[in-house]
Length: 156
Length: 264
Image 1 (tube, each protein chain N blue to C red):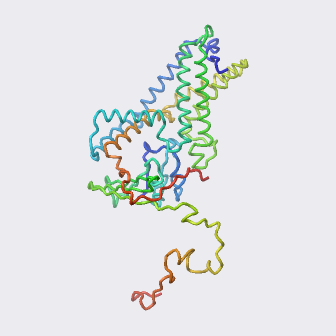
Image 2 (image 1 turned 180 degrees about the horizontal axis):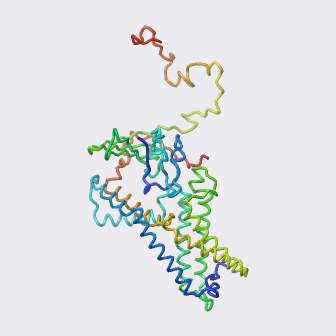
Image 3 (image 1 turned 90 degrees about the horizontal axis):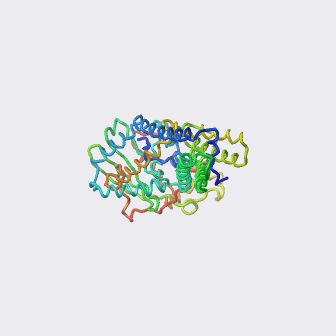
């Protein structure tokens, strides 16, 4: 579901422009309000929806699976560290969800990679990603599945 | 300079009646074009239809007293204190520009209708307000133009790129700047330059008040309506379909601090 902007709520602050990984949230040259210039290219990550301090961005469902009168709105409360969603179905049912924002401050839980030592060539050629397997909390390494246990009829 | 009445000197070559008619013509232009703008963009219809749509989702009906209270809160917070802005720098710049513009307009009207002729004395506080208003507009406006404007701050465009959305701020800044320069040249006795900047001031203010249909001038009329509707929807529980504020502390996260969108 790509996003769109309520012009009456937007104050043109630029948070969505700044955060959009697809670079499709821009400022309208006539009204100086945010606009999704290319909904077809929207990744639907909802970064802009969650970043908007004015709650001015909404999700528009594709007409084939969510037609007529549904609504998906989000409220982001930084001081509480919460993201709340309200889904209103077209038959009138409403569902509310509250989730904690789990973003950690830079330098505490999220390491500053620039300050860490460069990985060795052996590490770079390994199939393990950085910090694996420690980051997965698996002391014994990644699980391995024996070939004979693979689904029958599937060959590798 | 700041206690000198610039209008009085102009009355030597422009009759006071012509100046008064010009001010009235600008007022008529603003009112007329705002009405046309509202009809053309169907803004009033949008607000009424939005209010009708939200009726189905209301949790309670607001009494007349509550609606008055919401209107007062909107006026005090969103209109008079520019409370809508999430960025404090934008809020300060907007307050400077807004109050500067109001002071400048009121002082101009007092000077043009009260003390237009060179004869007699003008109380020092009126030209003082006129200059102060123009200076406030210039400070807030140039701060906005070079540093705060979203096109520069978040989009990364250079400050000299202009689009239609800039028509209002450019004509407003030109009006205030030319007014100050005109007053300065008049004060130092540079007659020809004073006349030149006076006409530039007239052109800039004519563009400012005559381009309401195409500029963002009308935002001062529909933004309060939008703010009022937003507050009503919070009070009656419809909240424009937004979820209620989170009230489950066990689900609260760490809390984060928003960064300014200036990463270009």
